[in-house]
Structures are given as structure tokens and as C-alpha cells.
Length: 109
Image (cartoon, rainbow, N blue to C red; front, side):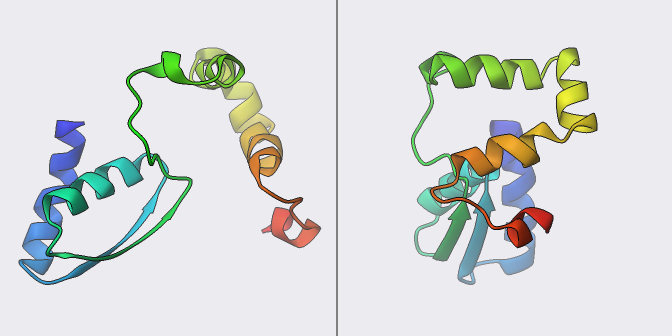
């Protein structure tokens, strides 16, 4: 994470110096953004986040077993077909994790 964090920290410092920053975070980038905000609370003006990692994860083992296996499969060579060719993550995984049924219009965009 330290290497990835450096790619975030240096450009922000170069662009905004000591000015307030509004962070818009998603997915794994949220962990980096929350870390930045924790280290610079005087600069973190606001945070908007979606699909964020909001609690620390010690390892992959602390995820539910069903999800762990599914995501490991997605990241293996066998994941190319369901993810890249059948768009399974967008068409099935994300909609099934939403708190409500997505409309046809939302699914089309």
C-alpha cells in the first residue's frame, strides 16, 4: 500500500499544496484516500465515497468464504471468461449486492 499511496500523495501535494481538498473515492482507492485524510485532517474538506473499504482487512481470510472464493476465481486465469467476455461482475455481482433492485435504465447505463 505504501507504494500506491505515494502515487496519490505526491500529485495531491504538487497540485493543492496546503489548500482544502474534497476527495471522491471508490473501491480500493478509498483506503488510500481515507489514509490521506487521516494524515491530513486540516486539508480534508470533504469525502464522498462509494463501494469503499471502510474497515481494515487483515487478510483475504476475513471475508465471507463464498465471496472469497468468487473473487479469487475472478482474479485467476479462469476469471477472464466470466469477467471480460460475459460481464458477470457488472451484470450479476453488483446488482445482487445493491440494497434495492436496479431499474432496467440503471442496468443499461
